[in-house]
Amino acid sequence: MKTLKRIFCGLAAALSLAASQPIQLTTVLTLSATGITTQQSVPGLYVAWAGSTFAQGVQAIPTTSGGTALNISNLPNVGYCTFQNLDPANYVQILTAVSGTVFARLVAGDSHLFRFDPSVTAPAMIAHTATVSIQYLCLSN
Image 1 (cartoon, one colour):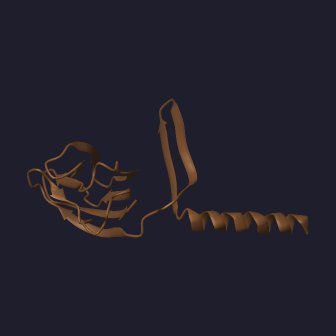
Image 2: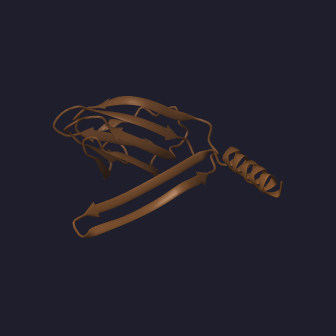
C-alpha cells in the first residue's frame, strides 16, 4: 500500500508540474566517431509559459537579399522556437531581422530548438541557391 501511495504522490506531482510548466524540452547531442564517443543530454526539462499564443506552419524561404520575415506576426514576442529545414540539398540562415545579423544555419534536413533573446522581435531567414521550405513552431514568452 505504501508503494502505491508513493506512485500516486509522484504522479500527482508530475501532473501538477506539467500544468504549471507546460513546455517540455528534451535534447540529446551524441558524437560517435573513430575513437570518440561523447553525449550531452537534458531529459525532461520543464519550462513555465507566460504566453498564450503560438505560430506553426511551413514557410517557403526564398533567396531574397536581406532575408524574409518569418510568418509569426501574431506573436506579441518570440520565445522558444523549433525549425526544421525540409529541403534535401540547400541551407538557410536565421537572422535577427530582415537585413539583420545571421546567427544560425540550418543545413538540408537539419533542425534547431532554442529560445530567442527578447531583443529579437521579427526574425527572418534567407535561403541559399534555391527556395527552401522550413517547418516551424514558435511560442510567445
